[in-house]
Image (cartoon, rainbow, N blue to C red; front, side, top):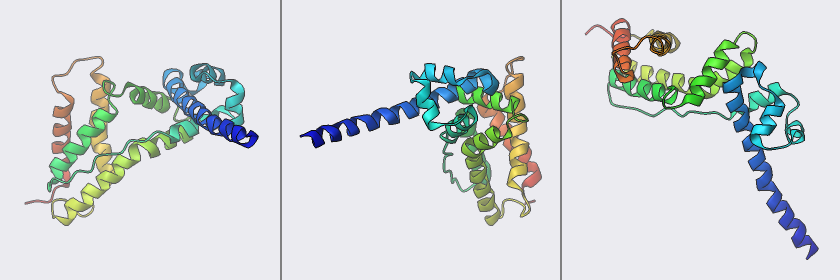
Length: 207
């Protein structure tokens, strides 16, 4: 009977521990987006997650390790697209990416990116982790689209995926910043198509 009681206590304790762990990581991401790394504190995390500070200190030795673990939990899986045409593939991929990181559809990730970029030189490892979890998957998907288009004879063989992404991301980020100050007649979907078409002039094979 006693052994059953001990087993029952252990089975009840595990979900609570997992729930607390999840709450701490979620609170960390929220506070990082709201306050930045310097502005947030472990005390604020414990209050937001509704756990004791000792619960945090038992799992993480510092605020830095907690933040890195929290960022490592983030992940966005890009859609798998295959229309048979590079332009259509790119438009579909970018529309989904814009929606995924939009201030309208995902305000937390939009705020988180702006905070991390603002502290990139002080804490480059945070940006590296965020990049690896959220943005690198889209880059890998883009590389796949480019190789497939090259095999079909649509693109030049020396196209560099990172360079193409920088050409596309630049206008989209600029639009996101400027549109908060000066309204634009272009929707997000319009801008994606305009940007893809502008970039394609330079990387398409001559027909």
